[in-house]
Image 1: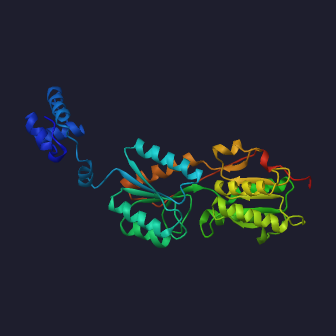
Image 2: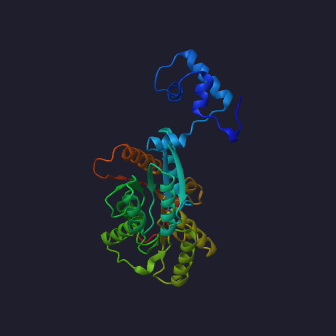
Image 3: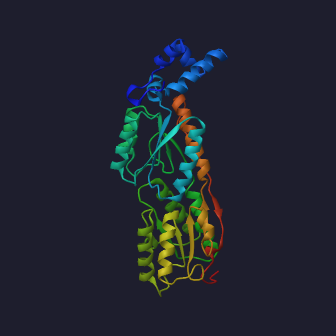
Length: 347
């Protein structure tokens, strides 16, 4: 009795074979009305025999929803985002939504193309880790189409919903920890400029120096660009330039978990020991941080909480657009391990 793919079974076919109305079949499929057990069993048997599959897309469009979410990540290689993605996906699936995932690679043009693709697929809402130019491109695009959007990690000046970590105070605390260990020449591997997370972390670093009477030195900023490669090259350049002089840094802060890999690789190639010759700490804690030898001191962001809350907030917005935009901060935790030891006792 099963029909071929060229002659696809319709709900009308099921109703005709079961000798019931289409509305009765619909009630069985959607569990929207009590149907006798005998009738239900008969309809389910016909569905099984014919291979009938409901047209979920047509059904969703009729209801003006597709039960899908678009998720745009600025750098999918970053372990921080992997953990956030997992939490978002789990929360969406738990609520009956599927997630379309895309990586913008921090490219605003690519990000806009992803946004257009998501709109073509009629996603119900979007979670976005924005590029530096999202306000100009994607933010405006979604606003014009009245698509709910929640930003994560990086904050824009747009009046919209956002979920992420508190960066300024957390970086200040991390820097002060090194200062308390006796370090005064602290290099900083910074992420991509002109994005909120980078600027907030730099400001926290500067504030800690100022608070402790240490003059900020632009020469100690490594342009890590949020990636491993630039951080490695920048670390080598600054060490080779300052090696053997009093101004050489005794500690390095990496502003994310990709850059700390570049920093550690550069130090290894220069035969600089951690922490005996150079203290190293990072903003971002990962599963592998405890596997470093020495184990890595890091600021641990609550990735699961951020992802789950972003998904919850977006689902709320999909069903209720009222209410003021929310900005939800999570407080990271400083996890102290062995990599922050001082080069020498200079207290």
